[in-house]
Length: 313
Image 1 (spheres, rainbow, N blue to C red):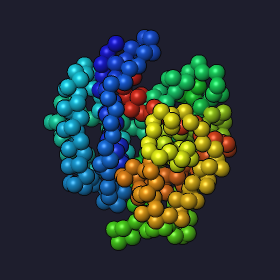
Image 2: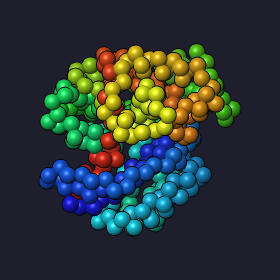
Image 3: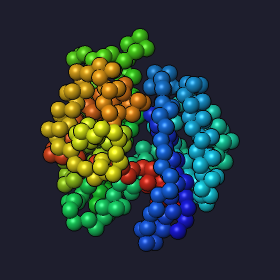
Image 4: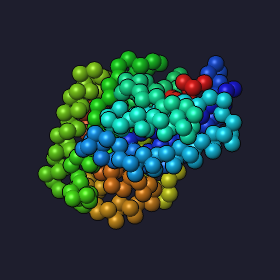
């Protein structure tokens, strides 16, 4: 077993996983998993640069993670940075800060690499499973981008497109620095138009409707699942491998579209950092299910973070 630390720094959140991994046998023992909402991608779509306050929030989380990695004695560490870091002009400031704090340089990976890691993290435990049909369509709805991967025991096609929940919210639901609540029909129509155009791009590479099983990853999907399950608090075990029907996703999306900030914040399993962006994320999930012809989504708590851990080992 190799003790590894995996860090996934996305547009909205930064997450840590420390685990003992044996790639030869497939054994995987999780020691620590944590997440902080840092909104690294704040304003990047508009300004092309990472905001100083967003960088400081991210560096503060890195300091916390460095302590955890040191305490648990991880032998290897891999830090992967995604959409916001690809887009920003001042990404060198981000890279230097992470290197100083964690002693490892962040890998600003491509969308295709991100898709591969997400697929590995979500499906390694599904390979050989007799209760889910192949091929899988793995959809990872992030803050800045969404990854689509079709595969069975390996990746067959992958594409990353710029329709993350933060990007869509900042582009269409923010007016004078505040999120429009509830979302107006014209703004919702603009989001849907962007999503449809991005799905057209994704389908140039990934045959979305060819998959037998849709597997959904990341905070938007797990939050929608928590709402569908009626959880009084966030419960990873209950959410992992739960199934949410198209009808449930459509109903929850409609509910979110009609809600105010206070009403969304009152949802028991809602993370405070997702209150403003969950509506856009749900619109992405609904559009993907409709385009893929999926009657349900299988929800996975294992995603790119687990893929990073496997790759580190």
